[in-house]
Image (cartoon, rainbow, N blue to C red; front, side, top):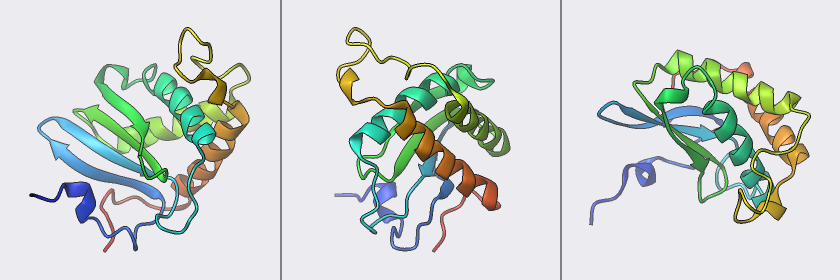
Length: 151
């Protein structure tokens, strides 16, 4: 059986940041790595779920809204995937920083936080999303981005 591309990345040398995970035709999959893998530092479900609701909503209302295919969490709980059609790396990074800032500054409820809108609406907490987004924004602001995996 062929090993999938994401399992071919050396997770022992992977640091938080933004990476191009794969390109399939006109769709780019971004690895938004918020935590260093295999350190025991993973997002709890409330944080992961809350960030997903906030970023998915903001990015689908951004300047790249019509090109966003998907935003969602990694099963390993160390980041998220963002799939964008006809992506420009610099533009995606700028939009990502914008939506992280919007989440940090948001004063209302978590988007989609009702029983009618979400299948597990009780596991949403804005403060958790804001803390995670602030930490990730600090990472993105602190380094230059090649969008390529290290190692």
